[in-house]
Structure formats: structure tokens, C-alpha cells
Amino acid sequence: MSLPEQDKNPEVTVLTEVAVETAWSVLLFNDEIHTFEEVSSQLMKATGCSTGKAEDLTWQVHNDGKAQVYEGDFEPCFRVKGVLSEIGLVTQILG
Image (cartoon, rainbow, N blue to C red; front, side):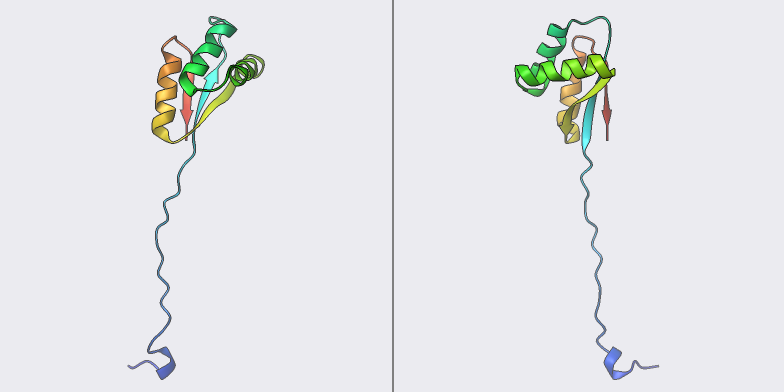
């Protein structure tokens, strides 16, 4: 069976796979062990954030029980989690 003249060169739609980057984030949970100063200091060390940002995040963790303290690719999130865990802070990576 042959195609009608108009269908001999049909438009071809090519589907390509698009890589969707997943945003990863690090959550920090409140505890009754660490001081505000310890948490703020470790946040600055882990994320490179300013003193003010670290203090704001520390207050958010304290008041809400947890806070997203970093967002990015998986490997940097894994590194941030590791630095926070050095002093026993409880963290989780979400993706």
C-alpha cells in the first residue's frame, strides 16, 4: 500500500529526553543539646552564609522544629550535611 502524495514526507516529531535537575535541600532539625552559637557557627562553616543568615536559620530551626538550611545539587548538599553532622546536628537531605 502506498501513501498518498501528501503523506509521503510526513512531518516527523522527534521527542528528546530532557534532563530535569532535581532540587536537593538540607533540613536541619532542632535539638536540646546544641547552643544557638554552636548551630550558627556550624551553619556558617557548612554553607558559607553570613552571621545574620545563620542566626535567622537557627531561630527558624528553634521555633519551627526544623528548617531548610541549604538547597542545591546533591553533592554540595551531601557536603553541607556532613559538616553539620560533625558536631552531631540532626539533618536530612530531601530531593
